Length: 145
Image (cartoon, rainbow, N blue to C red; front, side, top):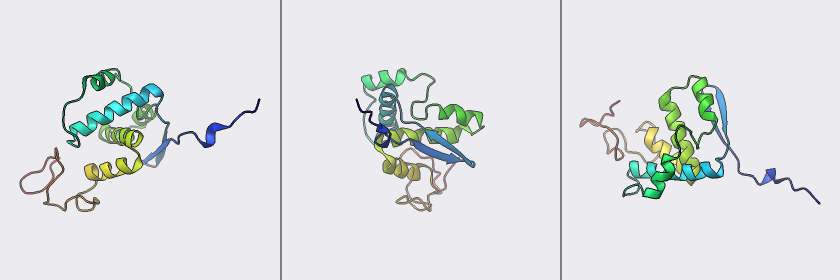
């Protein structure tokens, strides 16, 4: 019987760099993939990208996540050990959810809309323009913390 090395065709991981460190995120497991897809649905609803409520079957999958981080896997624990702040870890998690669920291009575009300075984000309004739904801006057009 001949062995087939499937490594050439296996899904690539996600490499995130921050603070001079590199974090290699493995693709989610089968169970983790269900949780990532459910998190993507919740994220799109919360961001106003799709309308409606979270379907019951999706909420059931979300309830099964507990304290795990299926999109980041063990990298979550590495980030915590390295002292990365919670806001950055949350953003990495959000990015990873959409990376695994929708692909890099989608995750990159969403990250630019959500976190890039408004004056340089591709397709985002210049300062004083309309902010994405759900963002916090004062009437002066400046972003608030």
